[in-house]
Length: 296
Image 1 (cartoon, rainbow, N blue to C red):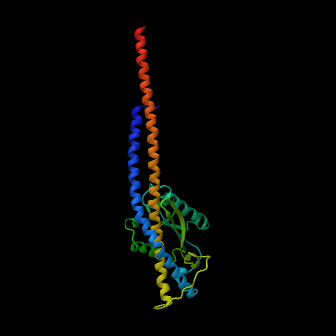
Image 2 (image 1 turned 45 degrees about the vertical axis):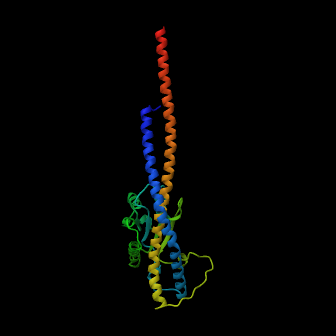
Image 3 (image 1 turned 60 degrees about the vertical axis):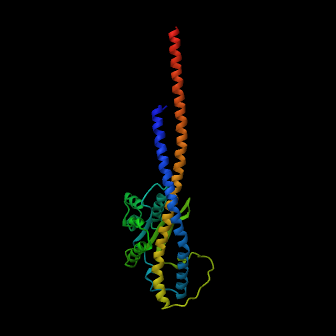
């Protein structure tokens, strides 16, 4: 059994850890509120934008001149992995990383062994893990979380769009954690390019009312403007989802860590009391034995 000093040191250490995890839980909860409001308020706008785009595109018929809908043979593909810059958020990062690697090994199983599946990392944790796995990381956008705005996100989306139109990649997918609630996040694979109206339509499989629009200046011009705008919204929404998911995962993880620390403190306190009682008993036995020896 450990001596009393060792147990006291461990109790002090765990108490200190519990204070840290408790503080981190409170900070994450405060950040979660703002991030949750941002993604919840943004989703209706993004959904309506996609609905308008699909309606306009269907009314226009097949847009053969749409460079973002050009389907090519897969010679080189890109997987955009969104993680966080910091850890201590449970399985948030590892789940997204596993899904990105699984996607490369299954969906692109013929290209992956040849090194034709490339990665773009948004978040230091994902970047570090991909590098450790010796995978090809072409781009890193970890600094975006220092100032997450639509303008900065639009620059990333534009780089991805330019890479596709220039023929550097024939397909682009985005892997991220979709925010469900504070305690739940769902790893999601979003097909980014090339565009397909069926996948863009959130109501696929359901009957949807077709809306007629009055176009000014022209239908073709509206489509050309809406498509890049919608693609930028897809990336922005994925990042908002990921940030809210990160804070939710960290809050849950720190809550569990705080509870575990409290339980450990109880166990160590019980162990300390038993050890202290055993020490006192031994001392009493020694005193009694000494007294009996003096009598003899």
